[in-house]
Length: 239
Image (tube, rainbow, N blue to C red; front, side, top):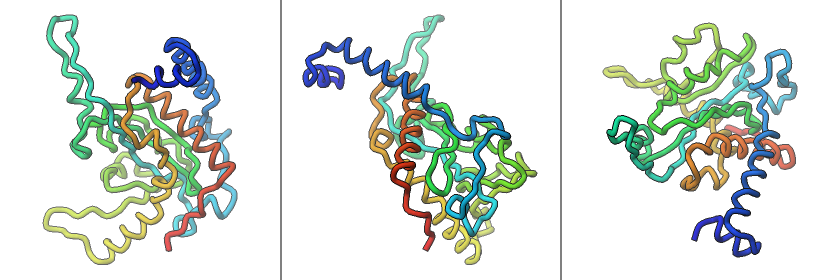
């Protein structure tokens, strides 16, 4: 039994009514959703309180990360030339060993989502997606971003932007104990992303149309922000 049929059973409506009502709700929520980094710089909300700024990284504005969600295996389709199009390969994530879809999020230390990218196939590298969105160009000279090892190399693209990234071991150049300690320290501040994005709709396998994932992801992020306004996350605490 599909979700629509189940809802129809409980509310005494047919499947078409349920689908139409759900579409109207999603459209309304999407139109209500806006993120701070989608506004022009001069109209963007500034950080003002100690709680909004990490004391260890006073220039920190964003914690950037890529989020993957498992999806149903896409079905191959026949193209206009008569050849079968492999729609599965782009969505296969070697990291997750499954078919996934990916989004980039940027979050404040207090948990508010500042940016949510459009959905892309799961095989897209985090670094590639960051370059495509050009998010770091939106940072002012006084703002910085924290990222994980997946963004190694991005500093060369934005030499004028302040970035905090963990050290990455190279061939014949293992990390020193000081570098390992710094990486652990940085990870404790990045955990705010995991605290924010725990909602089940983003954890479970996505079974709706892939073309709607971007909209639904943005809606969830918008609802996350509204929830945090009412019930703030615990203050970041690396201890």
